[in-house]
Amino acid sequence: MIKGKKFAILTPVIALSATLVACNDEDVESEVDEPTDENVEEDTDSEDTTTLSILGTTDIHAHLMPYDYMNDEEDQTIGLSKVHTLVEEAREEFEHTMLIDNGDTIQGSILGDMPAQIEPLEEDETHIIMDAMNEMNYDAAALGNHEFNFGLDFLDETIADADFPWLSANVVEPGTEDPVYEPYTIVEKDIDGEAISVGFIGLVPPQIMNWDAAHLEGEVETLEIADAAQTFVPEMKDEGADLIIAIAHSGIDDSDNPSENAAIPLSEIDGIDGMLLGHQHNHFPSEDYDGVEAVDVDAGTINDVPAVMPGSWGSHLGFLNFDLTVEDGEWTIVSAESEIRSTEDVPSHEGMEALVQDAHEATVNYVNSPVGEITTDINTYFSRVKDNEVVQLINDAQLDYMEQLQANGELDDDLPLLSAAAPFRAGRGGDFTQVDAGEVAIRDMNDVYVFPNTLHVVEVDGDQLKNWLEYSALNFNQIDPDEDADQELVNQDFSSYNFDVIENVTYEVDVTNDEGERVLNVEYDGEPVESDDRFYVATNNYRAGGEDHLDADVETVLETTDENRQIIIDYIIAHDGPIDVEASENWQLTPIEAAGDIIFDSAADASEYSDGYDRIELYEETDEGTRFTFE
Image: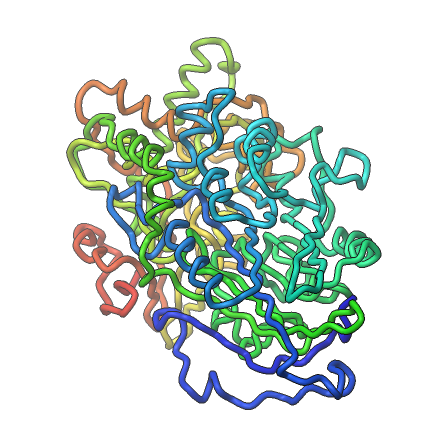
């Protein structure tokens, strides 16, 4: 068994590209505390140590190749094929390595959608992502939240083709604490003639029960991440695990209730020696988490437990390097370091490219299939501050679909129809939707609607509708009219995909008001919306199953199997001639009279599209894009 749970970090390493963190020699080579008697045996000779490197990937999101299918072009900052090259280099660098993955692997690019929804696999076919991971010789993987997006049957069929276990300790049978999947695995590895038993436990955000309720309700339940670890880590130690690594599809959050991003409480579980994190698409160790409670960025630890979060889409490979000694079969950690390495300057692995070439070419052909035409450019550059054409297109298509449902008798015709949609790509990581006028293809629709959601219809009353809009209004920071300094209008901690715009009602948002009191003058057909008014609202399975936007008692009246994205495609195909997408301007921000400037950031190209927006003016060009003022 491992001695000395709280061990010294002798040589912290933070290998990051220059674009991620400014790190000078003093930062990297700064002195750290020497090991103490409490955590390292005094007579340990450093020459007797052996390094075991645990290599980790996370949030690959079906990006096997360095290719952006939305823009139909190469992208050398992503791709599991580039990670594969780094893995082979690491196996040359370190004599003893293991490779693990942290989930959100089978969904997220069009290549991942192909076998799930577009060209379903035949019974004897293997999922291409499992082929790729088998080729890389993974030792274990944990299920992420997006593994459940295509339903349990597809998930089970997919992971059955893996040559390694897929783990999840906190997805359990309904009404029990019995895991549906293997909660952990213990892998025996030979190190210089001595056997070490390395345990891996998989953990996923329990919020999957909300996000994929349509697939999971009644089929599985979830436990809190730390609770499941508390149950199974002692069991792993009893079964002889010498080293325990938590593969937690979870990020870092020092708030009072870090249920979704539970790395900090997880690090407090006795017996966990290292953590592979993910879910947040961030980087650790890095300045992303500088100043977060319990986090030591320089050491690469959380509560003294080494941890690593290697970005997303194959941008990085994570390393948890343990220097170990063994005596009489008992292993001791002498030191550890965590590190992430960028794949940007690494060549794509030729063997991997050959393996996935057919799937890649089929995906490229599919995304270039023509759909129809639009008359003007549409983008999401200003979608978080004003009504927007991209969101309008989604809502128009969903409303058209609902009208067909009513005509076919699948929805009662006695309630008004509304539609909710959000700008999915509107600034996260600098990504925005941009579709040029003229012919549009499948790839453009994936740019408009990123996720493989299905359309659901909920019934809400007037109060529930207003509460929904109030939650969406968290998109904005509260503005103090008397403040002379610049104030940021958009709340960057609030994801753009949560900023729902609800079509067929009109309303204002007053950002000078407190949260919960911002949405004003909500009207339907020119009349104020009253508490007892009722509406059907088109949304998606993710939203209908959630608890943030919708009150707990909101009823889902229709769960379709039709993808929201396909509904938009069908809407464009069915349109007679080019579509003129024009924002209805059904909502606006109440005019702001502030002493200082109200500012927001957008893409570098945004200034080319700001003409005609009377309340928006260019403020300055920045390293990341363009900054505007809003009146």
